[in-house]
Length: 357
Image (cartoon, rainbow, N blue to C red; front, side, top):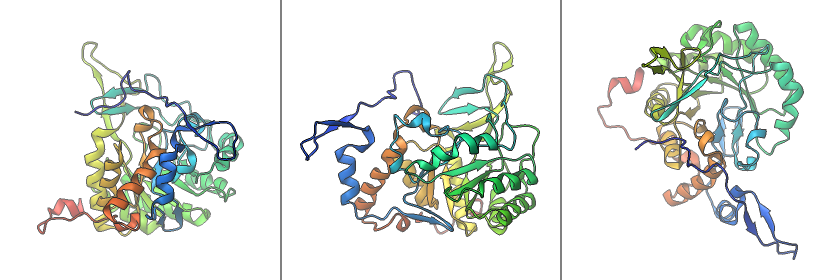
């Protein structure tokens, strides 16, 4: 049975207590830094580091944009030092108020959102958030969205002044924003935007692609040709929720982006397709709730993953997963996480759709 957040789900964890050998008083430590987790990480021989072309991460577990705020909101639940990276909420050139409410609705095995990229704009992001974010013991990958190619370039140029950032993720296809162009639905536009950004920005570039296309392999290939260091697969699926008794849509913007466990099979299918057809590192995202989900994406061909909707109902999950990944790799006899990436064994007569569409 599929489940996401319920009223009874705990969102707070009590701190554990450890003894200080220097005879100092007992001290509380964050729940994700208890002695069991620390000892697992210290004794593990598995190498969790991943390289996504120019982007190097200490482990493959990241948190997805739009589900983690600007990280301050997660301080009580997450040990940032355990994460492979943080991707804050999307930033646009000018402030955006977002879409009218209601903006979210829970669905069977998922969450439908129509936030509409509500944010204060790039200048406020730089003024109020960059210093804090880059002070954390964790790589920070900024996420930006533009209404046109020129805006993407301006955003990238502004962020280029902050080499302490680990990279930039281009949100090229937010499904619940009107007034702009879904660049990632067209190979030529995808290639042109990434190429223009790459020319002006020294930071590693990730292209976040939409599943709402006929052939995402062509889009991913265009992203690689444009100079993207990696692609994030996938953004949310377009959906709608209806109150049939009132004969009205539930979301204020009518349509929204579906995320959560319901989209995991779609995300895995797309990771498989792109991994088989395009030579570019993949960051998999879509419905990850536990370490088995992480392993499925890695075996399918993703070099890293992002935790999204699960952060809402299990906020400490992302910082627990690296230790769990260590344990599984040890159990599998893998010296490195890279040893299991793309190891899915296809039957000899693989359906054509698995490789091309």
